[in-house]
Image 1 (cartoon, rainbow, N blue to C red):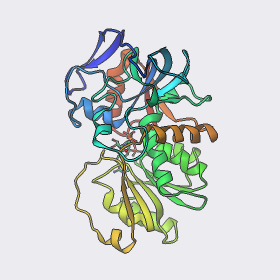
Image 2: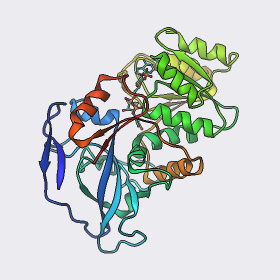
Image 3: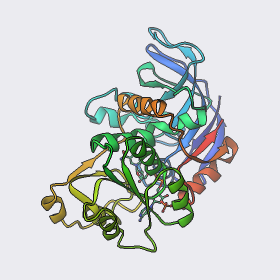
Image 4: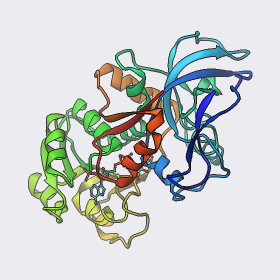
Length: 334
Ligand SMILES: NC(=O)c1ccc[n+]([C@@H]2O[C@H](COP(=O)([O-])OP(=O)(O)OC[C@H]3O[C@@H](n4cnc5c(N)ncnc54)[C@H](OP(=O)(O)O)[C@@H]3O)[C@@H](O)[C@H]2O)c1
């Protein structure tokens, strides 16, 4: 089969290659992959920011495709079914364990830049009927994480949700929060992106370059209340203001590290406002399935900034690695 391998932790170490076709073992399904979607994690792997055990490896965690063969003992699936293989295939549900983290597609297991992959049948989620493969490929990491954030905070009509930036997680969180009836405040570096967010339903827009004290702006916009949910997609450079922007009893859902992982933090807002600071590592197959059901029920269409051909994989990575150039998701089609 045709595949793209990453031969070293470098954006220039992506190369086209031919590999033996995988075979579905007992309880597994062979998936003909049709699309892969990039996450910041894939760039971290390709730049040495996130260690992987061995090179060369087939990168990219997220993808979608169709069932091409069934291993022994697999039932409930048929050839041609449109499916999304989950990123952590052994994490069916419940709390995360070291075993789940040890098996991640595109890191320790073969990823989505190949014609075929063999995965446990139990790790597959049906592609929502209104989505094509490119849109479906965007779901495992970004949609699951955004869904977990909205669910964790019990977002409901009248909730205030603060989103940082216009990357994949933020834009899914925007779509889920609006579907839940929330008021959304979104901060971005770009007025043009803020306008796109407004068209997707964002209620209040803040340019965080023009308004560096965006936490104060959030409190002003909400008459002092603050945000019931802050989806913390940035990390070290924003966490202090995110804690300030949160409402009494609010949730700061901490997922991102595009702005680094280490920062001094004033604990007073956490204590005084009795905040819930919730860490999250993507989600289980059950979480992905629930996110996909929400997407189907609300007929949400994931926002794809650009679709690259597999021959332009390096360009796709460079586009994401440049930071701040995209809005929503980047997809590689094959
Ligand atoms: N732990 C988990 O469960 C989990 C799951 C998924 C993702 N993540 C992490 O979450 C982060 C976001 O993921 P993603 O896929 O959405 O990334 P992405 O698509 O690369 O988006 C990152 C966005 O962050 C925004 N940004 C950068 N600096 C900012 C700042 N100082 N203030 C506000 N916004 C800022 C930029 O938006 P603008 O261009 O609009 O300014 C940028 O587009 C990454 O670190 C990723 O690894 C974690």
